[in-house]
Length: 171
Figure 1 (spheres, helix red, strand yellow):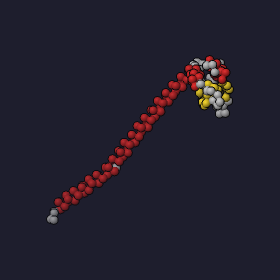
Figure 2 (tube, helix red, strand yellow; figure 1 turned 90 degrees about the vertical axis):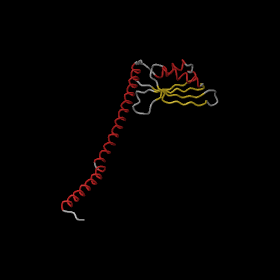
Figure 3 (cartoon, rainbow, N blue to C red; figure 1 turned 30 degrees about the vertical axis):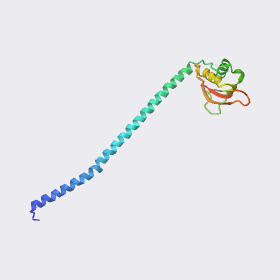
Figure 4 (cartoon, one colour; figure 1 turned 90 degrees about the horizontal axis):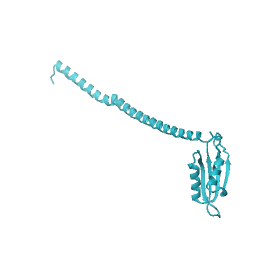
């Protein structure tokens, strides 16, 4: 090829420009494009974390509101409230006192001094009587919770054996 000096220089600079364009085409996806994609994934991850944090905050607010309702219920209760006497009265009103044994339960766990518990054992009762008794305890304005319960057929007797442990908080 017979090219003069000016054409050779133009061809040389054209080739260099072409190589620079190829290098830029390889660099853009690998460099800034890669950083952009990483940044986009990071933003999506942070948005997800923010949503999880908001959900946790909302759940905590709901829990605190329910806790406030429980505190108000406890404060509305008579300071002389006695769980044993309350359950004894509920058994009498349910006509189960003659088939019941009621005992104070001492907790082996530390920190439960403010959670008195009472165990009620019923013998020869029907399921309907147990349900009626549980409704009577639950529907009362005082905060009493059932910690443990089991029911099984009475051996040799008609009816059921039932053991229920109730607890409450002292104010």
